[in-house]
Image (cartoon, rainbow, N blue to C red; front, side, top):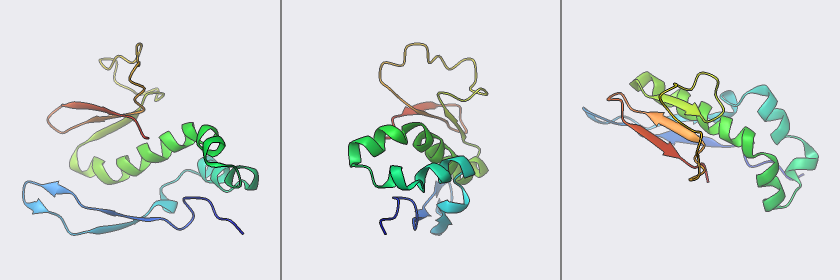
Length: 119
């Protein structure tokens, strides 16, 4: 049986801090992915799709999965992580003309703002 891309993934976090590189931290992303997103990823019709159709189908869920992984691992270092669709997105972040197509916004502890496309 073909498994979805996330089924067995473990990621490793290396965080560069003022004191140097933290120890490698093993993270089971299956514990971070929200139930609705996990159900979508485990849907047989979806995980048997071709690469292009799969990507289009799970794009929004994938955005939230990435946000949640980043939040889970970076908020303890005072980073703020948002998706462009989050209702709690700070009002000073203008996404009305998102021509670059960014999905994830990271605000560093020193208030620098970075926007990323998840692809």
